[in-house]
Image (tube, rainbow, N blue to C red; front, side, top):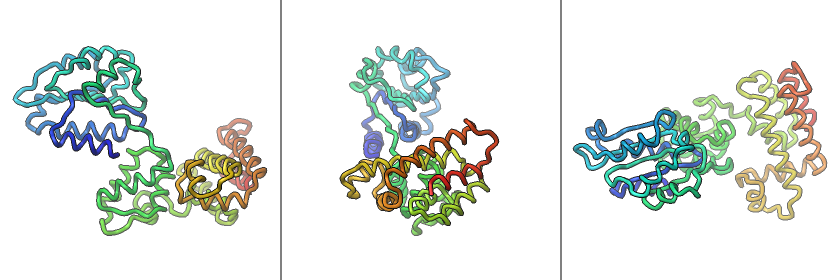
Length: 333
């Protein structure tokens, strides 16, 4: 995020590069930087004749270079933005001669998403030498809740830890999807109010009580009554709570618990680092480890893998989600 802020600050101060290669597995920041360039390098009047947006599936490298070599009309700069540039991966090397000597008055932006650009390529080295290369890395799940907090904080909002975790559990690590939901919350909630799990439930439709986050916690505590209630709710709402998501999450949880049992140092810092989890969850693993010895955890992991196959129709046909969830609870607790 700090690197993105620096890129934006440089653009605002007039330190604009002739080529931007925006690449990486996380598309959110690639889109944000490209959008900022699209809206801020040229004035509204200048854009009509001096700004072009192409898509990798519909344009060739030759066309990109041809347009990038044009001179601006009644403006200081020409802006050429290539979205979905990863579709040009087979011919991107043809951009090398232009990257060696880019047009000073052109701002060429390449949005090369979902994959890392090969840094061994000569074209990459020339872009880095004469322009700017930015890699947008995928956030690990244990970092997403902190990202949510920082994004909201930057806009004057606060969010409870449980609410941030709830969003992460439901939406995963897709920052664009998460940001869309955060923008919805900002439209309906005042800045002075902390966003809570109840706000998430009322405005986004994620149940604060019946979700995989609460299920994992209940199972870790061996709280049979609470786990049964959640799984009954899941069985009644299968589309919103797919069995494959539940079993995958629990498999991850118990696999991490197996790793926990094999650790010598069970301090919060060591556990969070070794398991790749938010420190907020360490006490849950410590409690679950007391409730589930290592041998039992190994058995559960084996059962979960069998249930995952059943859920996908392997070795079992016409088994309802409700029956699979009942079997899951019996096998675990």
